[in-house]
Length: 296
Image (cartoon, rainbow, N blue to C red; front, side):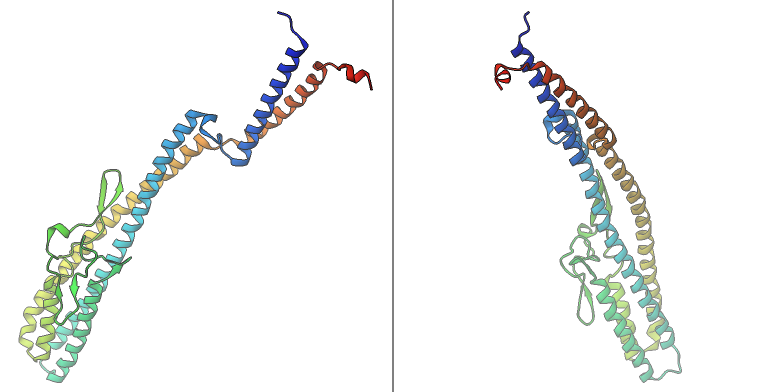
């Protein structure tokens, strides 16, 4: 096959164009920090990147769900602790009110403090987080306790269908965010506190013994719910640690697949620039002078 001047010139220009393309690719990698800028650059990397990014997005969503669980559990624990402190104060007032040396006026003064604690318990029971009532199971749009005297709980508080508010924390795994609505601020709690207030107002110290026993039962229920909540909180922390490890691994895999090795890219770019200069020098020799060059 005869090699002509036009063939040499055409091949030289094609190789120079390919050299420009490679330098442009390296410059894009340096500018973006990514191996590819469009799927056609490397379809395999692009396909794997979509899969890895989907996994990372899923992990990030689970982390947001964990934040919601932390918010619910921590507020629930704070509410139960506050209620327990209030009931503990009521217990102290009951023991004080049983003292035979107290006058009706003294017991009425104690009843006024019990009444204030009762109102505070209603507010705690109706605690809202992000506009949702956390002590009413899945019926988060309505308060669990009606603000009236005496306080009454919602009719559906004992309904098992609203008992559990679950949040997904992993694929196929959900964790309960709330406490049992009927096991914390139930009607028995408010009936006992109301009964104590009424007995003190009526100067009827004889009823306080039975009410004190019922109050101890209410406080035991609160302690049991708080213990169960603490166990779930410990599991939540373990899940959070595992999700955090998954996020680190997902980011690392995604980085290995998509991120460019900057040191290697710089080296390749410098090498390609040297090759390009050499190609330009060789091309200048291949493209022979024309007749016009001799007519100057």
